[in-house]
Image (cartoon, rainbow, N blue to C red; front, side, top):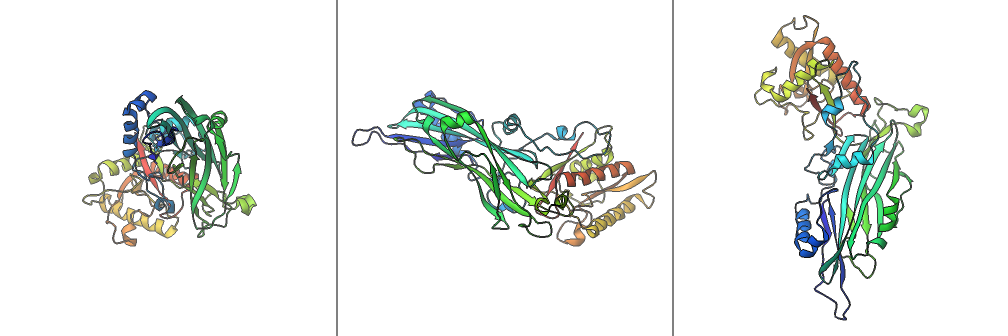
Length: 451
């Protein structure tokens, strides 16, 4: 949340002649350009800070890609998170049809680069995310700015493969003071709150070496620490034992006497959205024989399936078909005016189905259209009927049969070489497993095509 945490000033010295010492505190985008002390003293810098606050998204707490019940807990950012470019995620044309393993680590430098100067979130994968904010304090004596202090906070959340433990690494950096301040001895308290769980009442096991309260000077020396959060299985809902929550790093501080800070003493700056499951169709569903370790954690964000239409990519024909459906839907079959297939944006994602019946009905509906437009011999030359959205999604070709309110024929089919079709299918299945995509509308994914 970009906000003015406190912005107060005294009219002058108090009646007894003592200086009136106030602190104005701002929460800004991490990496944002901030005014120099001389600019603050001229008044221009204070106006700049307040303009930054005025341009902020008020109350924003969750990444735009958040999915599941956490998405309704707080306002969603209008800005897309920083992500790894699709061309990098796809890598070179694959010699073997293997879905890439998602990243499970993130360095401080990767987080810093991913957030840049205008991003609230950087989502490297569903298992490696980060967020950050800048704290700036102006120190005011009798309505005149006499000093400035600042520090940045970034939090990196990572999850090891088949683990129910999430590690949150906190980085306090870029400490700076100019002019007259009481910053060095200012106590700063860091807490990792979990204000909401679905289902409610879940219990979490905490670990790590979070220091609680440290002074500005002590945190500058410490720089980094971490906290772990684990949720035991059996607390979730449904057959997949689904547990969703919100994790909210909160920073608070109180200037040392005689300086005072009115209003809020810090800020709840950003929220991450963990999820735990023990779905039978995903890895580690039995915990390797240890029920206390079954399932795993992810971050509940819509993620991206990257397919390559590059020369040499084994799924090339399928990727080219989907690209046409995205860019020139009027050129696809079956015909439908104003066709717009889903899966292109986080606002309109695809949703996985593990229902064999739904999958088979989607394929039957797709094959019916391949035969309608290319005839009964559409398979000649070793071809198969490729469909988008995929048959393993609720948005597949039979969606209208299940929900008459959706647009009929809002899908695309095309005969493509069998090898390309099956390569794409293998990549999709690997993507589902590697990213722990669950059945239903509490999860989702989109598709990007690289050329």
